[in-house]
Amino acid sequence: MIATTTPAVFEKTVRACGDQVAMRYKELGLWHDISWRRYYDTAQNIGAALMDMGLEKGMSAAVIGDNCPEWVMIDMGIQFAGGVSVGIYTTNAWQEVEYVVSNSDALFLFVENEEQLDKWLNFRDNVPRLKKVIVWDTKGLRDFQDPMLMSLADLIEKGKKLDKAALDQRMREVTPDDMSVLIYTSGTTGPPKGAILTHGNVTWMAEAIAGLNPMKEGDEVLSFLPLCHIFERLFSVFAHIRHAYVVNFVEKPDTVTDNMVEVSPTVGYAVPRIWEKYFSAIQIKMSEATRLKRLAYHLAFKVGQRRADLMMNCKQIPVWLELFFVLAHFAVFRKLKKRLGFERIRVAYSGAAPISPKVLHFYQSIGMNLIEGYGQTEGTGVTCTSSPGKAKFGTVGAPIPGTEVKIAEDGEILVRSPGVFAGYYKNPEGTAETLRDGWLFSGDVGEFDEDGYLKITDRKKDIIITAGGKNISPQYIENMLKASVYINDAVLIGDRRKFLSALIMIDEDNVVKFAQDNKIQFSTYGDLACHPKINALIQSEIETVNKTLARVENVRKFKILPKKLYEEDGEVTPTMKVKRKYVNKAFSDIIEEMYR
Image 1 (cartoon, rainbow, N blue to C red):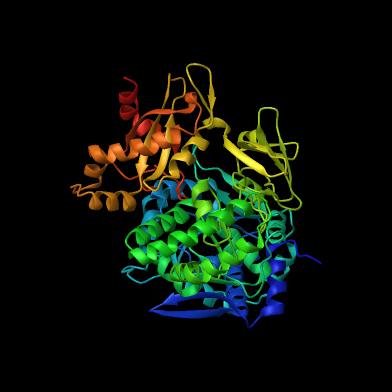
Image 2 (image 1 turned 90 degrees about the vertical axis):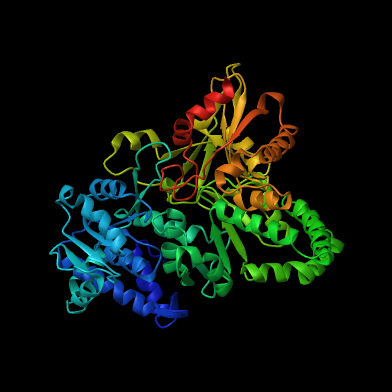
């Protein structure tokens, strides 16, 4: 029988795998193991202490901090007590933290360190409902005498001394329809909304995502995306407690590449920007390699491309081509993937935003099974994905087992499954707009191909209608532009305009390499962005894309943004999606200049 609440799923896994390794973390240069039993006992102590301090069933507690064992132990402890776990992005400004804490009616706030604690100090008088602020890394805190403050170590000690009978009863009282977590959307189109995911939602999805690509005890993953996002939460928490693989937490956010090599996970996942950065780094490395190595790579890559073309179009691969690919693997790709930490990856996912087809093609060409998945927070993260050997370029795969997808008359993608959320917290208007008759109105526009694979064409709200009345899907054209190694991101402009233009964000690593190779002098990013030779480079890349598009879809003018876009400035989301409306407003003078 499949368990349908997170406490029940966790308990079942601990009975089967108690002394096995559940998690690893790195400290002072060494990796340390945490068993399933220790993970479970710590979560129970946290849950018991929270219950004793007044956390009732259905009440919320918030967590803010980088990925680490403490984060997920707190997450589970809250849910063991029947509470609702609310994650907050570590990069959020204090005003955004206040919004989530207040909107979610959180009774407790768990913070990682002094940096996150300082954010609470800015709004402490505005959230009288908050009972306690609990810190898990107290190093550097000079004054820890505030009656509102408590260390996580003290909370766990408190839980150890309590009888667990009440907690065990609470864990049994949790039902599939109860709230498990509130996941706040990244706010690309307005204030974040708290999506209610029930225990039934998350336990069903943990089972369903393994239907096409099985997860097993021997698997390992690397946890580095924000844990408050559904993408990371699925792999580091919900699927983890169901399938009992090992989660390895990165040492720090800026050690991902080093830790990737050390861990060499068997299942990979990341947002497109991460895969694109690896792709750019490989291009630079190969351009700097010796002539012999470049020749070997070029020949191997030609073989890989031919194989990927057939495989990603669901065509039979000839035996001779497979043999040549085996040679290419042992001669070139095996070493390349080992240096990146990709040699053990059985399947890798790209999600949370569209990825350039050129980048997908590259990874498939070197023999890494990177596939694109599609979903949203409101559907517990995954709607469609592909299985090994059945991925198809230009699509996000077929609906996962148990999921219904249909296309509305206006092209909007509608989803129905046990993973569809219960609504937005304290937002009946938003719920009524998104959830109708059991169908999730995704806001995305798409179509099915002849094989039943879903193709995403755009966001419904982003479709551009030109002054001539032509409907343009910006996402498709932006992805074509992003296929260039010199373009990191692009925002298409043209709604109610006579022609299309684009704001371009350059790929700094590759453009700097180009500048160095061509003896272009610059001292700052702004110098690079406005240099005539760099603009000529981007112009040539845009012209290459224009040749593949209808005339009405051609990008006639462009401007390279004079600065990099940062999450801290509100220009991109924590998953690195550009906030289109914000960028349009912030750079309105540059846009108007293109249309004068």
